[in-house]
Image 1 (cartoon, helix red, strand yellow):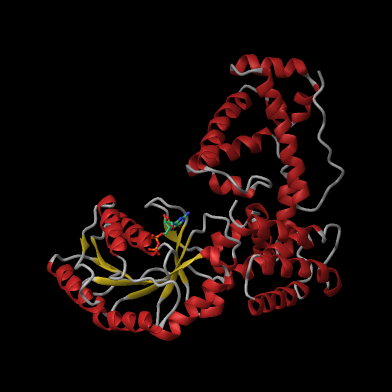
Image 2 (cartoon, rainbow, N blue to C red; image 1 turned 120 degrees about the vertical axis):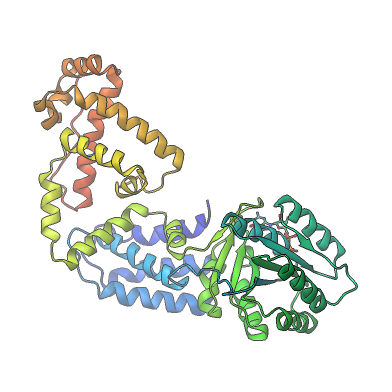
Length: 444
Ligand code: GDP
């Protein structure tokens, strides 16, 4: 699980707010200490942690009560929004040149995954319909050039090489000429990675940058190096001027510090992330999705968002009534399943149901199949049974009849009946109105 430790650390914070009515300076003190500790353990840099905690505290205390939303849920949402902000808010798209080839210059220390990123990036851009060419500029390691050629073949992208005796800036010039001749859309140049920053490396990069006049200069950094990655982005930006970072190895047991610190520390966004060794494992960096993953609470987040929206329209009571009065019988269930079928995808709907925030495509397909089964059973119910699921809970005979008429098993019918009561209880919990609603046991 990515950032599992961080997620766990943050969960400790929420758990301390159970039973509170409202967020106060006093009752958030301990949760805030948990958050601070979790972020530091994730290797987020100290000044960033300080600002983050301060900002979350200020907002949380000033929030007041949102009808139906519990304080711990409120804090989850506040932390989420601050995490998104911390990571730059919006996704930061790659820029493309208005005319002529777009040039992307890649820099980075040795071993961070730079050569791999060259090919992954070409693979990614090819999928967007762009033709690519790679330029091998690591003249200090012949093996790096060979590796790039092999990777280029793997993704069917040409690689321009000029051996190790030519200066990188000259390779860049020749490579770019070649790319223009072939009407290539995007040129990606690999450069030498050293074990550590040195003046020679920076000078060489500056020379290459001058020749290429690149649209993007991206520093490849390794997520495993935590806040050190953020410091590197700052240094490279000050020295040569970069447009952003690519964060690799996010699939490993990285603690999250790099993802959370880069933007805040350096002012430069993370544009793409590497999440595996395969050529397909490169994707845009979405701050909101990342924050959602860190918190692992898609359901709570979307619920609080909805509630806040409603508050803004001063309709909170209305929503509550709607959910409460729609006692959620089988008719509602059927309406929902049909609406879902119409929407074609269940992802969003499932995300709204408490406890079902994290669903995979195969789970969705499974759920869609289940819905068909449920529909068949509801269709053979009498109108009375649809409105009063209690009737089915109380009567094994009725359940037997429904099983027979719908061609399903009695177990399937029982599961459906149990499910509707669970959904009712969840909805009540969700609104913070318990009404002592317990799940009636199935008799028989
Ligand atoms: P370079 O020295 O910066 O060019 O690094 P390489 O591209 O040769 O990559 C170094 C190692 O890291 C290789 O074994 C890659 O397969 C691996 N690697 C690169 N990116 C990722 C990633 O996102 N996830 C994982 N798990 N491994 C990666």
